[in-house]
Structures are given as C-alpha cells and as structure tokens.
Image 1 (cartoon, helix red, strand yellow):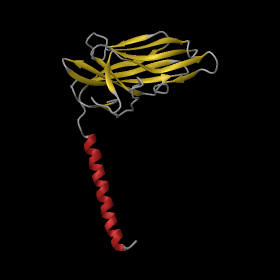
Image 2: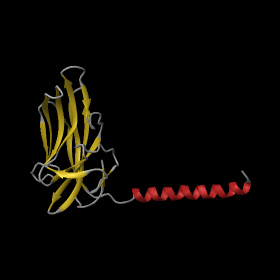
Image 3: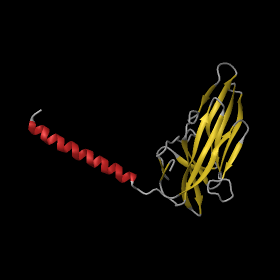
Image 4: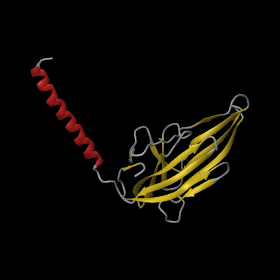
Length: 196
C-alpha cells in the first residue's frame, strides 16, 4: 500500500468512526418517557397459582399470570402451562404462533413490531412442561430459559396507547415463573425501552 493511499484511508476511517459514534450517541440521548413502576418482589408462580397485575395502579387488574394443566389425548401427553393473559383494553404482543418476543434490557417497545400484533383478550403460553405417555419429559416455549427478560405490554386508556413491560424469569428446576418488576409509560404513544 502506498503512502498516498494510506494517507487517504486513515482519515476516511476516522471520519466513519466519528459518524457512527455520533449516531449511536444521538439515539441514546433521545429522552425516555416517564414510567410508573410496580415492584413485584420476585413473586413466584407455581402449579395452580395465579397473579392479577394492576400495572397502572388504578384498582383494576390489567394482566393475569397463571398456570393450567392441559391433557392432550391425540398426542398422548400432559402439558403444564405457564401463561400470561390480557383483558379488555390491555394488549399482549403476539405472532402467528401465539408467542410474544422475549426482550432484553434496552430493546425497543413500540406501537408497531415487525411480525407481531397487539391483541386484547389474549392468552400466551410462556413456557410449558410436556409429560408424554411414553418418552422423556421436556420443556418448550420462548420463555423456558428466561432470566430477567421483558414481556412487552400495552394499555388503552381514553383512546390512547401506553406501552410497558413485565420483567420475568423462569426456573425449570423449581417449575416456577418469577415476576420481578413491571412498568407502564405515563406518556401515551411514546416508544420505550425494556427495563427502563
């Protein structure tokens, strides 16, 4: 490589690095809307237990986390399911397989998500223990290995949309869903980041 080429490449490389740093900093500097938090104190849900979450603290349950046992005579197996459910004017983010994304801290939550839609009166299987008539027991579901991941949620109030999240872990060994914390934006229509 000639000296002239090196002299041209190094400044271009430095300009590119500076531009990327500015773009990253600008996206991080966007103000995050104010959030209302609910501290769930590592609430554990095991077999036959449920919890009604009032995420906006208005005295009305917004989401329910619960378990159920489903017998499947066709596949000859029992499934112990750990679920999240939404109610009227509360929404969960579903794909075509009735799964919700398992978000990490800092992931964006917005009104529109590629390959997902918001649904009220929805029920999602987060994880399930499958006990076949023959063969080994196994776990399945997007949340079966969750460790402080975030379930996106949405409230509708007065025709306005408020976005939020619920921080969840799952323990297969102890067969329990753990609810750590929840939050909902106090500003309508604003994109938020999971865990903030």
